[in-house]
Length: 278
Image 1 (cartoon, one colour):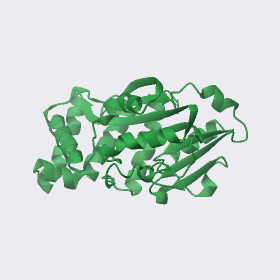
Image 2 (tube, rainbow, N blue to C red):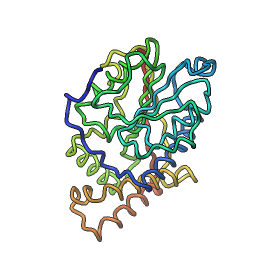
Image 3 (cartoon, rainbow, N blue to C red):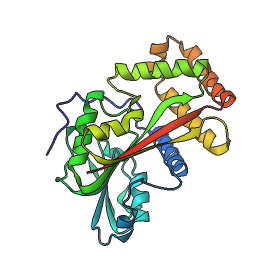
Image 4 (cartoon, rainbow, N blue to C red):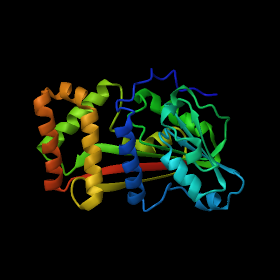
């Protein structure tokens, strides 16, 4: 089994694994389906998934959290076998709540996945930019490639956490955020380079794209994005206050000012995706 563990010591995930974060992830999953027109992937394998029977096609969801994507995929393609893997198995749903073609495994991809070479037709990974140390990304993607079948795909989806059309307060918050993540050994700007990472690992037939969502304007979608951004700022308050020099009394009003700017400037947040064939 290949291992990415020699690349860097694991970095603790900076966002809390609690009920509030589970709610945030559930909102974000629905947002993703909206942004991507209901699509759960962007590969050329839809026909293979639809025609699969008796678990002939295996799909892996890396960093699956509470398993929302894995469950949705399994319900849409009942002939596929879907495996969700996460280093924090406490978030996995009860077995009674998932389709029979879904299973969950506790494992850390940085240390190496517990699967044989060429097991999966699709390996899907989303929202892991704050989970892997910067130096581990190359080895991690090679590990994803190892467990993917020839002509199978790996797809990566990540948020770029700096809202666009930003005002002064938003620009400051973004700068503090990226600097704080860098101090933790994380490259939070990596979302813009997913295709470059896949190319470096030797993937073929690369495809990439971006989807944008309003923050704090344009109805329910904008409200969801703003709530997501606020939840991140609140969760990371201890390190962002330290980075910014803001006091406890100053921090929450500053977050309010940031989100007010989003509405006034019609700011938006970008999600980048890229996939490549083995």
